[in-house]
Structure formats: C-alpha cells, structure tokens
Length: 173
Image (cartoon, rainbow, N blue to C red; front, side):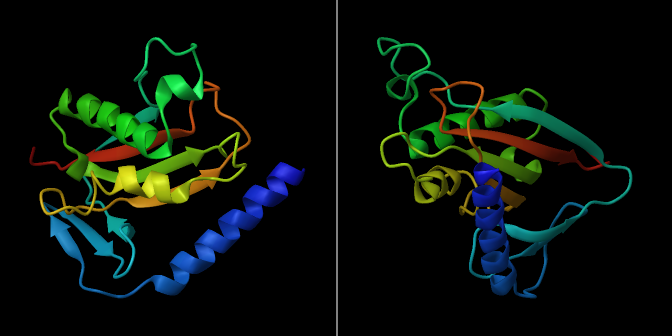
C-alpha cells in the first residue's frame, strides 16, 4: 500500500506539473498525424491519429548488457539510468527500423522506472538525458505523448527502466 501511495502521489504531482505547462501552441503535423506539442517540456500534450492508420504496440524493453563481465542481472551489467534509457530506446529504434518505421512514428510511450538501490530515488533527470537523444532533436522533432511511472521493481533486477511504445504507420506508407 505504501508503494501505491508513493507512486500515486508522484503520478499526481507529475500530472499536475505537466497539466500546468500545457500550452495551446500550434500543432505539428507529420503526414496525417497531428501532434499538439508542449511549449516547455519535450512531450506532446495530444496526438490525433487518422483512421486507416496501422497501430503497432511494442512490448516493454529494457537496456542491453553493456558489461558482460559484471554479475548477471546487476546494475553494473546495465549501467546508470541515462545509459539504460538510451540502450532501451536504441533497442526500440532497431525494432521499429525492422518494421520500416522510425522513432518519429512513435505516438505513445510508457516509462517504468525503479529507484536506484543506493540513493533510493528515481533518476528522472537521467531518464530525460537518454530520452532527449531520440525525441525533440533537430533530426527527429516528433514528440510522443508520454507517462513516466515509479514502480516497486522490474522483472530484471539490473534494470532501472523499462519502456514500451505505440507507433503508427500512416495509411499512405
């Protein structure tokens, strides 16, 4: 129950902060998609998907092992939050590429994070450091809608983050 209350409180706080920062900036359209972007935070506030588009749901992915000499399923094997976020997003990018899609086709993202065992805190800044290498850049300006959650644990005890996405293939692809 304490974990639920902590996660719920964090989610309410995050939602309140994001809701307060929503602007009604002009929407950015890619193909037939319409993205209503935040003015101050690198996520979209809403995305409109036209009928006839295919929706692709990717399972949650964590980071690949970066140090095979480290103990299996340990934090040392996978790296810190920024490294793990970048690794998970690279795996997602590769999976999408195999389907003829890009990170620009991602419309929704769920980020599940656990607290660092030493600091007992979520490294949201580390997650954002990895995230902003893939979204809101000059080469890839398209932003997904996104929720980030603090969870008690993930299936792999070495993971600090697991990410799942939904992508859209416009009907004219």
